[in-house]
Length: 185
Image (cartoon, rainbow, N blue to C red; front, side):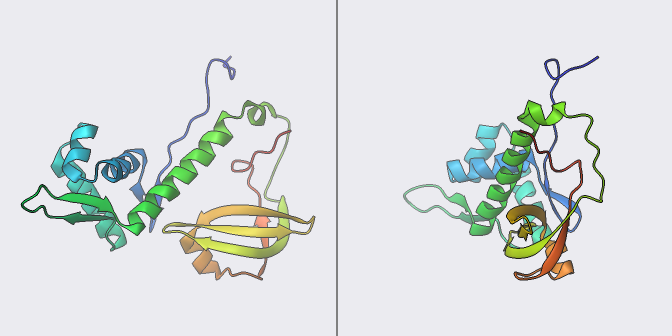
């Protein structure tokens, strides 16, 4: 029998756009290294990847979202060219890092995994009022003041926010799925 001392939970994170993977751990490393090196070729070399691979990866993302995430510039007499992330590229990288950090924190908390007798279902519904909506590139945060009173935050897709036409002041329900929220004391 396995226990938390011999194994640990793990997951892979990626950001999707229109239901298709956009950026995962490798893509985040590429963007982070471009940001650090200010160059596609230096980033490729640092990561042990070909320049062509890095260039094609960036182009795939940009084609998917129809907006630039990396800005390149040519060199002159004084030196070579370079590259930097656009504001959108920075936002995409930050969004990935936030989700990855949050999930790693949840997964690293052993107490959350010790509770095995708790039964949860979709009947776990919290009614409340939306107090803030923050839209990112792909995901959105919806802050909900529940009647206790307390405020909870749900990270959902931007598309879901737009499909449901969620805005501040709306009365909505948060339906808690046991696979996504772990509470321990």
